[in-house]
Length: 165
Length: 67
Image 1 (spheres, one colour):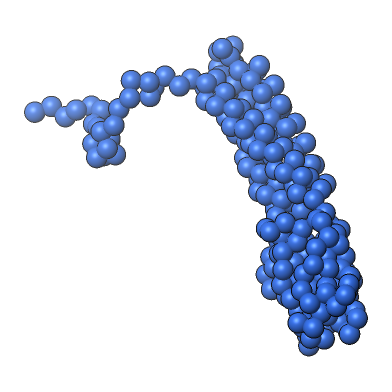
Image 2 (spheres, one colour):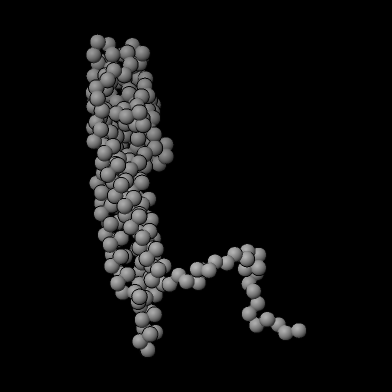
């Protein structure tokens, strides 16, 4: 009995899949596939940039949020603004003083919440902190202040007037 | 070195360059997603610009591959 000089690899024995074209991909074709992939990713990047731009163009329409009496001083109220996919949070600082911000942390988009003890907005993902009144960055990795939502009290109701990214 | 060997090495190098550029494109895509998540328009546009330049660069490298 003569040994086969080129024994079949184990993987080929276990998975005997063969294609007529499997040996016909040239280096140039392979590079073309890669370049096509690069083109698709570039188009995806461009689309994401356009989508980001379009999202931030929407600054919202004025609308009533909640009766003032339903939010106690020092309490927060969660809502969405300017679109239903944009989480926002409102804080009643005093009897007639209300502020509202986008709940998305400017670092990586996690949701911030109010820390009453520290009087600040806190992002639990990477320990980012923002000023409760202005939304300015106090500490942590966020590069920009929180997006601000203009609010106003009209006839004992809190209104959102517009969003400033 | 014979011409055919030199050509083979050159086209291998081009393929390696293209692979590196495509890997960088994947990284840029993750940056774009982060910019999207945080509404960071300047970063999103900068990423898109670099990504398009890299895609054009890798397409240009195809010229140096043997047919």
